[in-house]
Image (tube, rainbow, N blue to C red; front, side, top):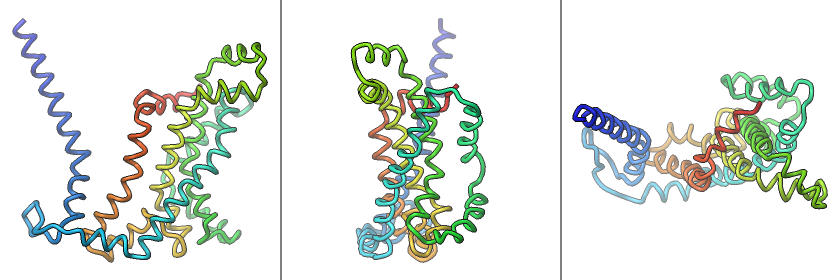
Length: 274
C-alpha cells in the first residue's frame, strides 16, 4: 500500500510538472508580448521594463498602413470563409452521402494540399495569376487563401454529415417532410456543430495566411500577417508586440467560442472519413 501511494504521488507530481511546463510554454510568449506592448524601454538583463506606456498602442491605431492591414484582414477572411463554404459544403455532402469513382482519391488529394510547403505552389500559381491579371487584386488574395481552407471546409463537414443516421432522415420523410425539408430540419441541424468547427478553423487559416497573401497581394493588399514582415524590420519591437496581440485576439476568441465542439471531438472526427 505504501509503495502504491508513493508511485501515485510520483505520477501526480510528474503530471503537475508537465501541466506547469505546458502552461509556461503556451502562456509564456503571450505574457512576454503583453509586457513588451506596454514597455517604454527594457535594460538587459532586467526582465521587467524600465517603465510602462500606452504610446505603442497609439502608434498602431494611428498608422494608416496598419489600419489598412487590419481592415483588409477583417474583410478578406470572412469573404474567404463564405466562398469556401459555398464551394466546399456541397462537395462535403457529396463525399458523405454518395459513393462514386475516385471518391477516396479526391479526399486524399484535398488533404495533400496542406501536406507539403506551399511556397512552391504559390510560385507556380503566380504565372497563372499574371496571365489573368490577378496579381495585386482582391480576388487573387481570396483565391490563394481558399487553398488553406479547403481541407477544413470539406473533411470536417463531410464527417459531420456522415454522423447523421440515414434512419433519422427516412423517419422525417415518412412523416411527410420534403427532401429539402429533411436536409434543413434534420441533416444540416445535426451536422451544424461540425460545420461550425470547420468555419472557425477556415477563418483562422485564412486570417493567419501570410506567404501566398504577400506574394499575390503586395504591394496593393497587406493583411495583418503580411504587415508583420515590414513591421519587424521598420518599427520598434514594442509595436510588433502590440500588433501580435491584435493578431491573436480573433484566434483566441473564436477558439474559446467553439471550444465545446472542438473538445467534444468534432475536429478529430473530421479526419476520420471512411
